[in-house]
Amino acid sequence: MKCEKIEELLSPYLEDELSAEEKVAVDNHLKVCPNCSSLLSFMDESKESLSDFPELEVSQDLLNRLYTLPREKRKFKFSLDFLVRPSLQPVFAAASILLMMISLYAFHPNKSLIDKSIDRQLHLGYSKVEKLYAKAGHFKDNLIAVKDNFLDSLQQKKTKLFGNED
Image 1 (cartoon, rainbow, N blue to C red):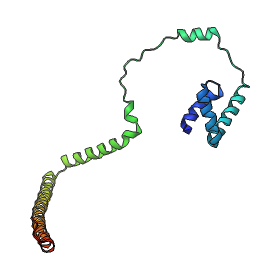
Image 2 (image 1 turned 60 degrees about the horizontal axis):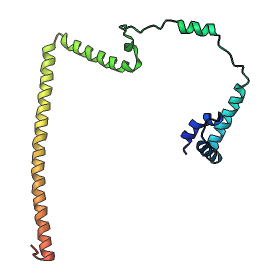
Image 3 (image 1 turned 135 degrees about the vertical axis):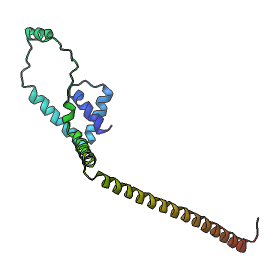
Image 4 (image 1 turned 30 degrees about the vertical axis):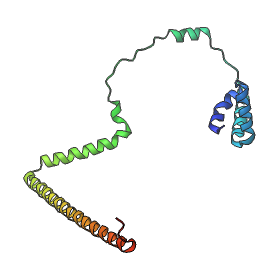
């Protein structure tokens, strides 16, 4: 058995609550595994030291009072506690930066100049993409021509070496 399974069985092993098969399996594992053996000895020492503590009896009066406590039903409460979670701080930071940039753009006195600059940059980007697309098409056509030439030369070599077997 694996150590994880044995570790789950050590407490019932100490309490003598295991079946005979499980007890034999734990015994066999403890003979070969020093880590589980030391864990068992530690658990046994803990059990012995805790046995010296007196067991307290709960008074019936206290039990009755505990049972008579009204159980509060959880009512729906609107709460914004989820907003203070640390995991949301980067999201709020990014949202703040985005809103700040939008407000700077929207209320800038030279908004028309910004629009022209953005438009110019977009058109430059589009023209670069068009050029790349054209080059890619040209490259593809060249590859097809090279492939055809390569296949023709292979066919000629094959014919020279092996003769016409078609």
